[in-house]
Structures are given as structure tokens and as C-alpha cells.
Amino acid sequence: MPATVVGIDSSTQSCKVVVVELESGEVLSTATAPHPDGTSVDPRVWLEALRNAWRAAGVPERSDVVGVSVAGQQHGMVAVDAQGEPVHDALLWNDVRNAPQAARMVTDHGLDWWMEAVNMAPISSMTLAKLAWLRENEPEAAARVHRVMLPHDWLTLHLCGEFVTDRSDASGTGYFNATDNRYRPELLEEYFDAVPELPRVLEAHETAGSLSSKWGGSGETPAVVGAGAGDNAAAALGLNLEPGEVTISVGTSGTVFACSAEPTIDRSGVTAGFADATGQHLPLLCTINAARVMTTTAETLGADLDEFTRLASSGPSDAGGLTMLPYFDGERTPNLPEATGRLDGLTRASFTRENLARSAVLAVANSLADCLDILRDIHVDVERVLLIGGGAKSDALRSVLPDTLGLAVSVPRSWEYVALGAARQAAWVATGQQPEWPRVIYSELEPTGDAGIGEFRERYGALRRRYEEQLR
Image (tube, rainbow, N blue to C red; front, side, top):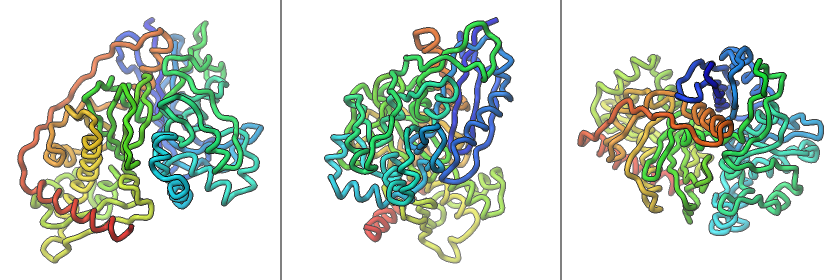
């Protein structure tokens, strides 16, 4: 029987488990279990979702699993007491209640200082700002904190009993510098008034431990468990991302990231200087609002996704002068946690179902295009764009993205690349080398020269600048 590995993607919305043949990279089984909606979650529900997806994928009955690894949503604050029990719900990456704490950090030291310290500007997403919020608003819970970890670390701990993390996820905490690979405990002392126990940082190829017997598996030798990774780093690993390639991932959030052998420092603080899951670096920009802008607009229109696509494709290409800013839940790029969405250009003629649908699609595309422009501005090499994520399945988004970006877009085979990246790391840990699994491109999308899409981009940029000026 061929050996297999298991990749886990514990995302904002669900837990996905894939079983992959070690040699070929063929996916043999997959299962998903939902996570509750919201921006703060009891981390114990992630464990239950993992157990459900683990069983549904048939992992406990397999005797051929040699490696397991977890990729998870970044930044989420999992704080536990001395008995290992959560002292508070985990605050997720998209929870913006701690925006005042993040803003104060910038005031305290300035952006240049933070970029030198951790290559990341303080924003509401970062774990350090969430810990600062906990200290100020839930002091009794904060006083009980013994350990702090990230969502994927929590699951790894329960899979193998080891308290570890990896560079990619640690680099998004605000108290770890991926350029010199060390924690900055003095920042925890300053903003949390204590230094909890932190997970040991492993290299991507290092073994965290052995899979606990309580997770099943009938093989004679327990599977090894990898260090895991942050979700975007895992997606890059799943794609085997190369220099010159930029990935745009459209899910709950929108992310735009590239791989780099050297750290990329954005003095404006907009680009996060994360680590990747191979020992290199992953300059990344993230928007809070992506696929849900389109699904929420579809729900408002009373349309299923097929009807929404038809509406978005049947009106004027520039959305009839209607322009949306898609800041439904605040925004991270640009860093406007208190922002709300905007519709501009409303007239009786422009306010149609078709124009509203197309404006939502174009708004998401333009938000991602702004991120790509920022990468270009800090001299990241952009030769090819790869489009992944649930939103990549949208015909409406695919049809406008090349013209919005001004660049051809490659769409790899639709798959769960975060989970696949975790499986790839599991194979690396189990065998000592990265597997040579093929990357299959589903389609190549070329710009068409659509003038309406260009007109929307000009209006979108002008509206965004006016709104930013109002807020600042």
C-alpha cells in the first residue's frame, strides 16, 4: 500500500482534511467541517471540527499515514492558563476591537521602528495588539495567561503534545522578527505587562513530534507531525510558488503575496514582511473584504451565485457609473479598521441590479489590484499572477481581473492549496525532502482591453483617496 500524508487547513470558516498519496500527490480523500461564524471563537470548537473532518476523511482507519501537518488562519490569539484551558475566546485576525491598541503602538514608536523591530506595522490583526486589548479590557483573564499560541499551534499541540510553531505564523504575531528569527519578549512586557510561555519556533522541515494514539491510525509506527504553517505560507508551499510569481487568494479575506529569498521591507508599513514555509520570506498584503462582498451583494439582490454572475456580466462594463468601496467589515489594506463601505454615483439610471452586482465584483478586483500595485512599488518582481481560493471559482471575478490588474492571470486547478501545502510539508518532514508534485494550470486569462473596466478603476481610486482623506 502506498504511503500517504494528511494536510489540515483550519481556516476562518471551516476545517478541511485531505489525504494525499505521498509519491504522486494524488488526493485520495477529503472532508470539511464548519467553524462558527464570528470574529472571536472558543478554540475548543476547532478541535471538534478537526475530529469530525478527520473521521469523515477516513484517517483513523488508515495504516499508511506517515506524516501530518496543520495550516491555520494567522494572527488569532489563543491564550491558555496553566491547565491548558482557554482564558478567553480566541480573537481572530478579522476582529478589530483592538484597533485603538494597535494605533497607540504606532504612536508610541513610529512605523520605521516597528518595521525594524518585527517588519510589520501594528494593525488590529496582529496578536500583540489583541493581547494588549485583553490586558486592558479583561485583566482577570489576562492575569491567568500561562501560554500564548496561534490557531495552528493549538491544533498541533493536541495532535502530538508539543508546544511549537513555525516561522511563517510566528512572523504575524508582532513579537517575532523573521529577519533574525527571534522573539521580541520586551514587546510583550511593554504591551501585555508579562511574557507568557511562547511556542518553540521550528524550521519548516523539522518534526514537531509523533501523532498521538488517540487520533487513531493502525500503522506500526506513528506518523510524524510537522511544524505547520500560516495559511498563506501553506498556500504558497502548496503551489510551489517561485520568485517572480504572485499569488492572489480570494476567500473570506483577499491576500496578495510573493516569495522572496531576502526580507522585503515596506517603510510605509502597509506590506507585512512575513516568513514563508520554506525558510524564505513572504511579503504579503491582506484585505478583510473579499468573497463575502460578492456573496452579501448576491443575498441582498435575492440571487443565487449563478444569477449573480449573470447580473454582473449583463450590464455596462463600467457598472453604469456606480462605484463601490468594499469596506463592509472595516479594512486592513488600506489600514482603516473603522471604515464602512461606500456606493458612489447613485442615480435612478445607475441603481440597477446589474450595476450593483458588477460594482461589487469590480470593487473586489480593484482592492486586490491596489495590493499588487503596492508590491510593485516596493520592487517585488511581478511576472506572473496565480489566482486561487474559493472566490477564484467566480466567473464574474475571473472575467474582470486581468483587465483590472493589467496582467495575464493563471488559474491553477481548483483545489484546497492551503491543505495541500500542509500535506506537502508533512511529506517533507516524513521523507526529508520536498515532494515533486505537479502544478496543473486550469486556464490562462488575458486582458481584453475593456475600456469600461479601466474607467471603473479610475473612479475607484479617486473614491478611495477621498474617503481616506475624510477618515484621516
